[in-house]
Figure 1 (cartoon, rainbow, N blue to C red):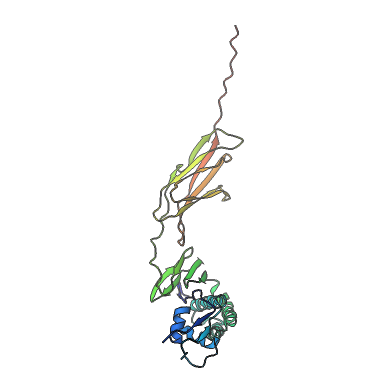
Figure 2: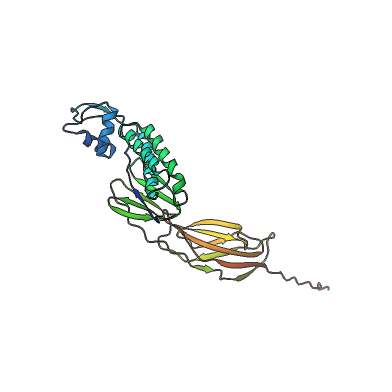
Length: 300
């Protein structure tokens, strides 16, 4: 079983009008490259306009693919290609899924986009049982032609474009621009170091309305973090408080809490990167008794 899987980024079309006029000395492949971002799209234009030759006279008005239908089919094909790349060499239903994917490719090349999407989705469903126990991820292609891969669980997924490969781990996301290699991986986030309160602190506070507070939590800054996620739990693991603060803030004042023991952690956050969690600390809130002094009034 593989520990990482290959994703070849297939890039989408940019928004286009519904018709185009063929320019001087412009081939069908050049037209497809200019408008669809892929010279192989000439076969789509040819099928869509009922052409029998790649030679198109200048001034000819050609219909262009419906952008939404083409993007839907391209997304379905990208997901099916990735699912097929993740399977073992001889998985169940692989041949059936491969045939379904070839059918989808043919539909796409002949501009039958809805049929292509349906066939590609069918290939993905055939492989879903095979890949479900491995990685869970999401692939999308936007209108600008960029492919985004988000990995949720399982082994890393390898994203390859322009002969450059980048692994994407669970909790991470990578966006590959059209015609570009994957971006250079950013340095992994470091975990914040907790400052106050100290481990095992016993904090005495005067109760107000049956609760104790405030308590301020603090931690060290982490380079590259765009924010911090703070969690306070009961000893049994029940979530008591959860907050997200800005990267410029390394402290949080908790709302008043009932007397008792609590544990807390802080995670460094950055978009597209796996959060880095701190170690866990414990503190205890106890009531500080208010001393009352009762004396006799001084009578004259």
